[in-house]
Image: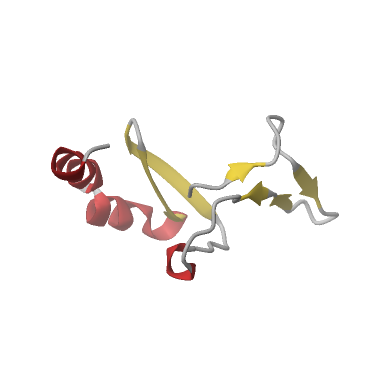
Length: 83
């Protein structure tokens, strides 16, 4: 996501049940179809220096398999349209 965390020290709030809330800010207006919200027991696996695949732990391997080519797509798009 392109939003910025509110401060360098991770602006978080921890509830009594141990769950954390992270706060981000997006100062540049974006179309609503570019917004993604993820809730759950999310884990990530970095597959290239700039691509991390995020999903629930139970389907992480399948998600990595599905999106493994993302870096290649980004590189191709940058060759066509610039960084």
